[in-house]
Length: 116
Image 1 (cartoon, rainbow, N blue to C red):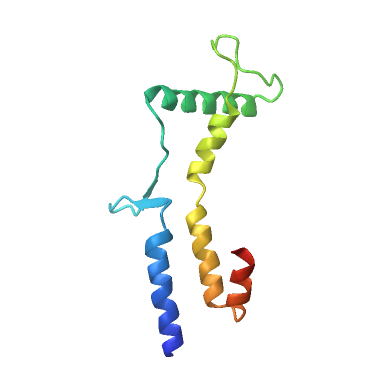
Image 2 (cartoon, helix red, strand yellow):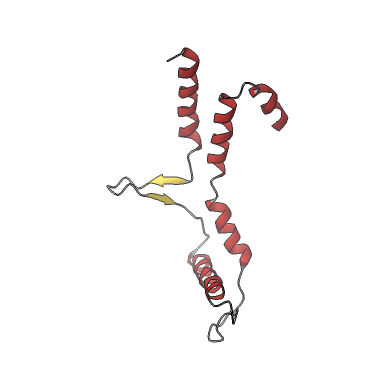
C-alpha cells in the first residue's frame, strides 16, 4: 500500500475512534448496540413513553385520529418526541463521513475552507 493511503487509513481510524459515538457496543455474543437517550428523571421518561404511545394510537387508528377519551391527558408533546429523535440522530457519524470524503477529495482544502 502507498504511504499516502496508509496515512489516510490511520486518519480514518483516529476519526472513527473519536466520532462513532451514537451506538455503543453491548459486548455480548449477539453483536448488539445501545443507543442512549438522556432524561432528567423518571417523570420525563414516563412522559416520553406515554407520548410515543399516544402518537402510535393516532397513527394506527387514522379514522378516529384521537387519543381515547379514557386517557387522562390527551395532548401529545411532539416537541418532547422530536427532542428524543434529535438525541438519537448520529451527527458525529455524519461528520466522520464528511472528513473521509475530504481525505479522498482532490479539492479537500478548497471545499473545507467553504465550510469554515
